[in-house]
Image (cartoon, rainbow, N blue to C red):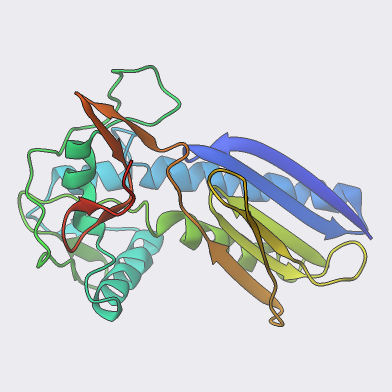
Length: 245
């Protein structure tokens, strides 16, 4: 067995894909299929693209809109996570993120806004997504952000694709990583997690055939808005940044 690795920048982060297989040509085809899924997913669900499904959905808040299958599934999961975590997970946080200063992707030129600014809209902890069979609606004057769920959802989607095609894999999308099978030495994967200042490292392993770890930090997604430092980790129950700077 041999491990094959490819990386690219997408979804505002570095994405790394590692596949363990015994056929290089076959593995290359799998990589191509994965990058195609990633590109399509970004085009549909990036809030920084003016014509993405997510942006158009936010622009039409207050009216029922047709949604894709992936969007339908993410919205269902978002409602479940909001309820099971007593409001600690809330996709309606977008106005607060933009008010703080997170209005543009970090890989663009300062001041370049590529999508609508919804910071004037209202964040309400009571907001809910009403989901139909093929439609969904959010309250007027609200807007949603899928940053807390989309990358993990995509990682699982990619893992479903490769699960039965390779002997092992790890798929890293920013701070979200999913592993399955075994490495080139026939051993279980171990995930290493570094602290923000790189002074500590935690190793995570699991007996499950497939498992995932999601992390977040402020080493990259941070900035200055006026004279105030900000980061993207905000408690939706209070609107206060969880990590002080």
